Image (cartoon, rainbow, N blue to C red; front, side, top):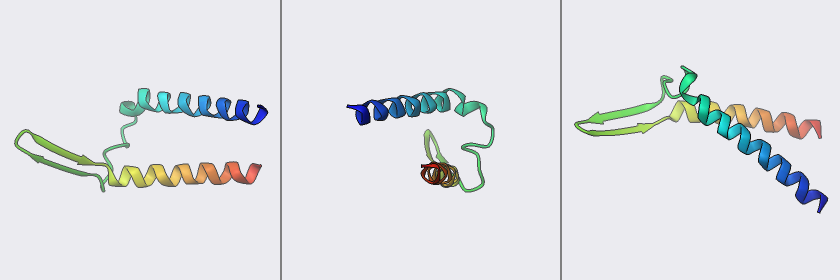
Length: 72
């Protein structure tokens, strides 16, 4: 039961972090507009694939999880 309680607390913290990220996503000017993000506009069709932003987020999350694993 103790392990499940810890996992629920961690899940709650992750969800709060994700919620804050969604709230402030538009206020961070660099995210979604990096020079590797793909945007194709044709008529009333828009295709958007944030390739560079996805790589940046992946690197940052990898570093965070690496640091957390080293602290344990």
